Image 1 (cartoon, helix red, strand yellow):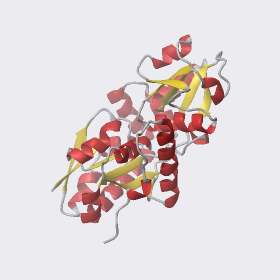
Image 2 (tube, one colour):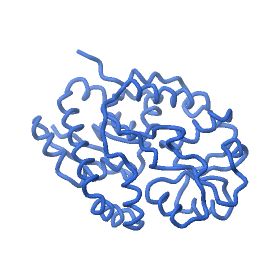
Image 3 (cartoon, one colour):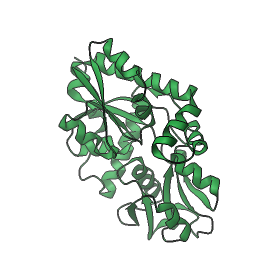
Image 4 (cartoon, helix red, strand yellow):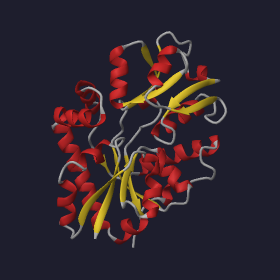
Length: 287
């Protein structure tokens, strides 16, 4: 049997795993082979699992919640340690926006459906505002930074090398440090049939994730050069971004499930998902 692992640029552990031999080695030990399926939008991970295109994937905090809301029977397998330096909500230096409450009535650029939705929705909710009605959330893109600097939009969620480059250039300030609002973990999940029928395969994949993280942490310069050559940006900005990550894979804990439940509840209140989600349902049942 071939185990297909989903890969997209927003998940650094899987990105580097796909360039190393660890998945093949770990899966061979349990009688399976590894394949990788590349796609551009991590928001689609739950759908790709449900369709059988991939068997295992990883994203930020939001896609597994929306996958459950869409009726996909996913199971959490592992999470990263918190990533407080992974991203931030930026405003321009001369902006009149000084607090989250000042965002009311403004336009915010972000990667809608990613962990960035969790960040913005939770920050607004904590301030007594609604993601659904108090801001205009627009999908960000290559022009978002310039729109922020020109005053055309009020705020922009930046992550990774884009965040490093924006802060290095100056003229912007951090309105919301991610770690002040959410833990922003990298989250890995699979279909229930694989999690419950072949737990040894999941264990092998988690071992491979840990090995990929250990490699990246020990080879930050090489990892930065790979990403810059493949995705753009400077090696220095990539190394700054990669150095900010914890590079540690943890087990799915009650603390994590509680974090995800709080996110799901915010999404329901704001209408981002259209039905309540019980996050604890996304764990493997004991046989």
